[in-house]
Length: 190
Image (cartoon, rainbow, N blue to C red; front, side):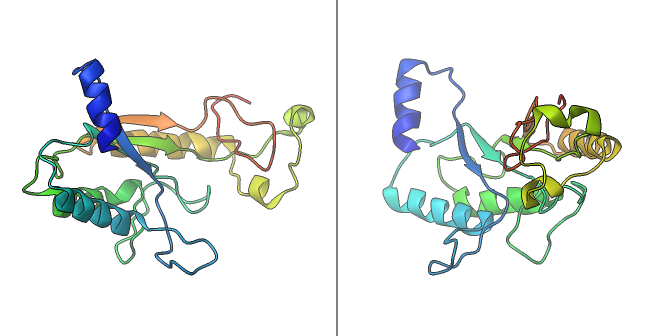
């Protein structure tokens, strides 16, 4: 990230470097089936590494976060106060963790702009549209809600993002559904 930041800023100092694109969950178990970091652990480790590097310039202009829920049936308003998961409603935890990681360095932390860059709520495919899809009987495709619920959850997400002072963007994942039911059908269009 530091190398990319420096290169891009050399090419054009006005480029806005959005870094990380962090998943909302992780196991923090290096020997587990999926050896992943939780976002809280990852941000803390990134801050430690940044401090240890002795770097005196930032590594990003904004922080990207994927705030998607565990299941499509869960609204974005659900917080995770007793875990290392960071979803939409965990904005205070995200800002606090960024502050802890970077406070007192050249990299902004508590004031770092945030982009919610991958938020999607998967919908059930209406019978009249199923002909253009495949694999709709998979477990992935069964994690779906009605169009009305998707619309409500997207409205909630936009409202939450609007009220979070550091948030500068929200990207819906996807504009159009993926045809493969093993992928994701969260688009605004079938």
